[in-house]
Structures are given as structure tokens and as C-alpha cells.
Figure 1 (tube, one colour):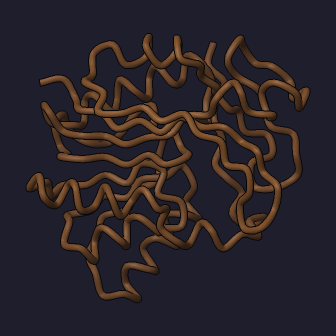
Figure 2 (cartoon, rainbow, N blue to C red):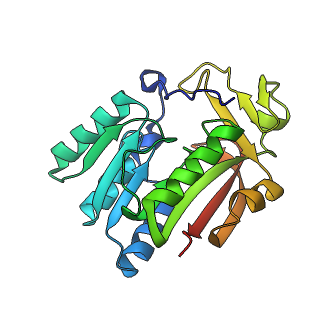
Length: 220
């Protein structure tokens, strides 16, 4: 049975990184603009860094997050910047959008926040709301990461641990993948690339976490 996932506690966030677009987003924005894409879903929008970036670039943006606090902040940033977007709070396992609503979708450090059953539901929802040949970019935690391999966090299932470190992710399940898991999860999609990378240092501090970064096309 799936663990009910929980929203980040943004009141405990002490990092400015979640206000600044990730480096991959600039590549994606240019790629998707060149492809003529317009309808963009920021799945797990957080504090709105990518929603605002894509709205300012002229995309039609929907922002979605489990946290009402994050959704409210995203709306405020859009209003302050004079751009229009639609923001909603809810569960990524049951998205409130019609089938084939979006050309492109970004889920950056988002879909791992569940267990094995939950990731299957979320990926099915991503397939449903993307149009045929629409593109998605998402990240997944890797089993090479300290958090899975060495931290000793409580295990929920063979692929999932519950974070118990103090901070915004306390009590949130994290799903971890390996190469075989990636092959199994994305059999229906055309994968443009899969990168398996380690962040050694972030903002001057030792980090050492591993992630998969996946760009793919929805089945046509």
C-alpha cells in the first residue's frame, strides 16, 4: 500500500536555491520554444522559480504543488511580476487536468517524493496529461546516494526510505532508482537522454548526492 506523500514544510527552508531556476531549465526553455511548445506544466512548482521563468518567456503556464504555501507563493510572484499563470494545490497521483493538456512538463526534484506504488501512479498521470510526443523532464533519486545506501533512514519498501533529518523534508518518503528501475519505468516512452550525476558540492558545502535526470517524449 502506498505511503501518503507529504508536502515540504517551506517554513523550515533556509536555502535561496529554491528561488532560482535550475541550470537545466534554460536548456529546456530554449528547446521547447524552438519546438513550438506552449502549454507548460510545472509539476511540483515549489516557490515558483520555474513557473515564473516560463511565464515570463511567453509560455502558458500551469503550476501544481501539494503545498498550499508553495502555491500561494507562486501566485504572489506571478502577480508581482505582472505575468499570468494558473496555480493549483493537489496530489500528483491524481492531476486535475484533462488528457493531453500539455506540450511539455517539468518535475524537478518532485516525483521521488513517494514510494514505489506512488511513482507508478505519478508517471501514469504524466503520460495522461501530456499530448502525444509531448516532452517531460524529471529527476529521480539514485540508489547510489548516501540517503539510500548509508544513512540508515527507515525503509518503506525495497526502493523507498523515509527522511528523518530535521528540515523541510522531514517525514517525507523518497523513492530511489537504479538503471534497471529506469528501464522498467520508462518502457513506453522515447528517452532523449538519461544522465546519472553526482553533486559533490552545492553552495560551497559538501553534498555528494546522486540523481537521474531524464528527458523523454510521451508515446505518440
